[in-house]
View (spheres, helix red, strand yellow):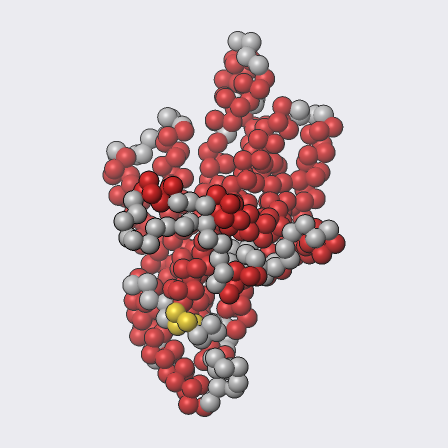
Length: 358
């Protein structure tokens, strides 16, 4: 079987897998206790209590869109139709279209979770290989103990400690949000001073970039993301160290490693060039799953730092039983995980020629 046939086969499998996930998610929502229409009540945009007519209208919309109160097959059909056509409905918690809420929250989550995940993987893998290089030493023991401790820390406790020390005590970093508060009123840094005559091309746009304002824009986001990203890094890097160490310890006993050493190659070359390459397959699987769950967010961390990503979005939706948000988030995360697994399978053949798509 060639590569094209393999990709086509995996896509077909993924479509059926996605449909199965949709059905399972639907059953989970059906079995959840309580009626979500009970939570569509309390406030109108002005801050007062919604009138009975408004509450009744909200219930009617939810039942029409998602089929609550109708037969099982009707609800399932509407559920699958809405997800496959990217129609997630209206969030009664935020009183806006769910797609719009997802549109501006996803970049924050990708930046926060994606950045911390990438840094954790790179640092953890390199650290793990170096631990194997120093195996049996004090550095090896200290690294394992440190990794176990950091991986066992509750994220909410770690987040609050970092927030208390670096933000409230030292005042080095902001204590909430994803950008400076003055930007919330629309006063964004004027990073790009574009020509207003509509004749801007690529070069003119490049020439009109304001470096000072661009730095303000980048630093504003970076300062607000540093502590939550540091929290996630500390929590996850230890797992990559231990996992890489375990995989590498299995690899270094193989014959080709012994042969490489017998040729007089340096230990660093043996471990990084020969050992790590052959130990990469399980690491790729874990990395693919980690990146696949990027859009799931980090609910506790985002809640502590009031970071407006999908984690906090999902947390509030669970608390208030906003089914439109939950269905959309679960659906998007499922797609990301499926795509990540396909990418991992393709990388297997690139990194290991022994693997054939057949």
